Length: 429
Ligand code: SF4
Image (cartoon, rainbow, N blue to C red; front, side, top):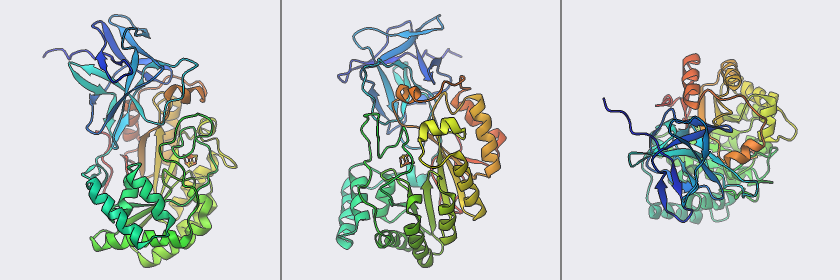
């Protein structure tokens, strides 16, 4: 059997030209603050984007040497991939960031390398659920559906917000609300009680641009019911039970609007007994969630960076709550019979440290979480690391997933929320 071709660093001149590092250089990725070899990779998936990291220095390793060093030359900038949905990052791009560098925009930067003329990426498939990974309608067909709903509900601010998200920010959940299929978005809240380092709708101190700016005003219960009802009616006409979700990328925290959302849920549940009424939340207000579950919310996804209080607080910068409230919210969802999913915001070198792995396994088991979503945390890697405590080395993201699957055999691993009673997750493949 012939030996596999070596992985060599990919570099950019910052003006759109990309080259492979000269022979003798070996590609490395980054786990936490440490440069490490690639242990698992796949060809760059369709739908990925390659980008250079401006103002940064690329790292590589000389063949036969163990330590990483800066690669100099006419193409000195590191290159990273941003993965499409359904893939999880295993390594960060290995690079150094000078103190004077601007903070990078919020993407899930992933290590790439060249192998015999093909671009490889340190990633694994995490889900292949067809409603999210299948073909989407053309831009013209989507625009026609957006205009149709705008004409039907001309003063509805949820429609106005979703129009921007669907057309300008390519938000698939917002697009579903116009297409009458799958999980339809119901953005609810302009405010939040956290200040996450990687919040994609509001950045308070990084200087990074936000990919989905926060909705400016909170909609009324009537506006939310109008949009949710038309979505669920169209789903039912197409033979689906239908699904709507509170808590989107363009908003704050829906639990801060629990009084309004109870009215919305009661109304939608009365009209659509089979529907999945879902909430994506930071889990900060268990009593508010209890009221929503009692009103008819039957699916809940809680986002978590870590179950460890100091790491949780360093990332979320929460106001008026702690990890204990988040755990209580999960217990409330389970006690109320709702489907419970945890959305783990993964970061190589943080999520996969031995201590994190143990705590994550124990907590998921205690909470009886049904599905674990593995999402690559977006943000400038070295900027995020500068805000977190120093940690022990990770065991590797792929090893983390193997451990989770082995020790929690009833836990579904995936990337997308299913409607209640729909099939299992795909697992990492
Ligand atoms: S909880 Fe959500 S909305 Fe609030 S700051 Fe964090 S990411 Fe942003």
